[in-house]
Image (cartoon, rainbow, N blue to C red; front, side):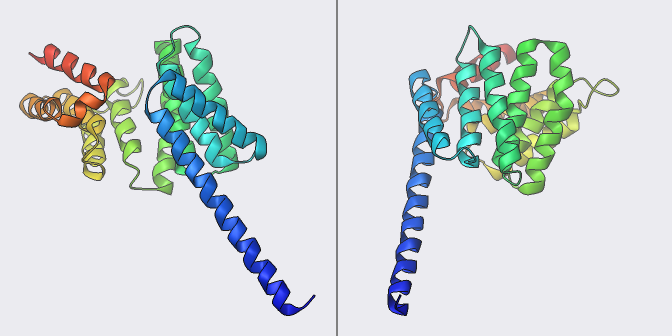
Amino acid sequence: MPQRRLLHLAVLAALLLTFTLSVHAADYAELDALILTKDVSKIQSAIDGLKELLGQNPDDGEALWLLSKAYLYLGDRTEEGRLKVFETGKKYADQAVETVPDNPHAHYWLSALLGRIGQTRGILSSLSMVRPMKEALDRVLELDENYAAAYWVLSQLYQQAPGFPLSIGNKKLALENARRAVELAPEDLEFQLQLAKALEHNGQKVEAKAVLEEIRSHPRLKDDSDLQKEAEELHAKWQ
């Protein structure tokens, strides 16, 4: 085969690969956007689409961790059978960690699902999940030290878990991690709300109320009804 023809074939193959990757990237972004709507029917559509991608490639790490995320969002909006939904998500997270061990998202969503499973099963299971959650989050930050959501969840862990010797609860670390999450993603209202909680938990009530009032007056709060409800409930509690 002439050398020029070989060159043309190589260029064609490279272009085809680039096109395929860009199509998949678009698919992932569109499916993630469906999950983030928090609408059950759209989350289910995302799950169907991700499973279709997995049918084409069972080792698609991106699809695996996105599926774990989708099942967490679905479980949060499911009453009957919630535990089963979270456990299904964890299975995909476990596969993602095995398939793409250097992807911080895989470890993050594994941690999040461990937390949901523990909360659903009850207090004793919640305590047993603290250590594996912490290990998964530590791994996230080993892979990406600027992964803001990992600091956000760590703050919640340190705030909600009992202190030594039962568990890792630590007021100071709860606040430090909340501040770091907001520092990395100052536009995220969920991170700001956790900062308000951590401040109050540390006895800094004036500062906590000031942060909460900034959140309540933010124009984007109305776009997230769940977060708005939580902020208003916290406001009523602190009055």
